[in-house]
Image (cartoon, rainbow, N blue to C red; front, side):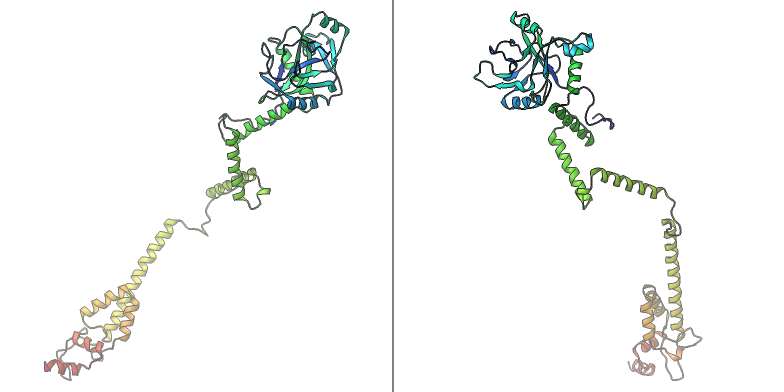
Length: 385
């Protein structure tokens, strides 16, 4: 889709008018009652093609009523000239000679089965020369200049009427521009301009939603519903929020985040991940060392007072302490010290026989200590076996 110039106004200032310059191929005096037929009823076209615009055009009772209402607002009579000189005067410098005048309030719609159904100007005022030309059949056709709805072909306004013997004048670009200028200069409401405004609006909506140029009104309406849903989801007060407000807010958020990404980190508040990981590893290693030292300290204390006896007992308690210092402490707190082993030079091993004749190994003494059994009783039990 081609990008649109954002400075392009919604309403075009060029000469956009859908202006038809056409003869309707009926004689000036064909009605027989002195009235002049301007348009036939129903659908019609220029016999040789319109100078500007494209038929077919259409006029019925309803559209004729709207056309009459528009024209009747004028206070000045409509000029009937010769060969569209009202449009050519600025180009050829010749004066505009009136052939006659039509009162804006004398338009009349005639329905079938009238002999000549269509829109008529009742009793136009002819000049002497024009009346003579018409009577002598020196001039024959009516050529109205009108605006129309490009969608429906409905005639919307009458700008000028001309008597001519050349219906649908060929190749006169100056006449086209002059007719469009005349339409643009009128102060009367012109529905054609409204239609053009709508087309322009649809074009801008297609650009806004990035739709293809052939997108229909239904396609545009679907995108508008999505935009409405977006507004409702981003604001509690959707009535006071527009899509533009949301876009501006999102742009500000992106700009703020971009500024944060580019800003220097406050090292008093944050530390790099690498530094934190290194500190965690050091703490873990230090904690492990401290734990091992504590286990060794508890084991030594237990050996010194006879609560830890023998290498196997020591190895077991060392493993227990590495898993849980609390469990090791609890075990040692509940163990009964063996006074006889405290401070021995044998490294915690019992002598072959003590003063009481006790001849127990260190492991046996440890069992006695743990179970609260007197070593002498254990010795007696052992000897009795």
